[in-house]
Image: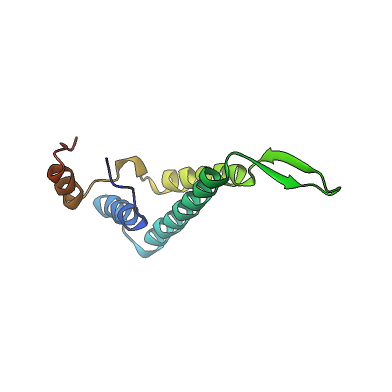
Length: 116
């Protein structure tokens, strides 16, 4: 089973993409840091949805319990939209985050071949 992505791994990969384009200047690296912060927020929102469910119950203004969509769903969509816009603006491809040699060694120890 692949390791879960980490903020550090995402940042390193995106900065490397900038570096390979000769665009690893401070202002763009700061934008990568903003992207990583959004990724961390996305992970927290997803965890909340996973824990509480997509539909939650809460007390309305007259004291009755009502079911409604989890508010994190709307927030999650907004964060993901901003992440896509930021990546596009920087010319980065988050889907090309490379696995590290340590990850590949971990898979080999478990008898799983890494697909590259």
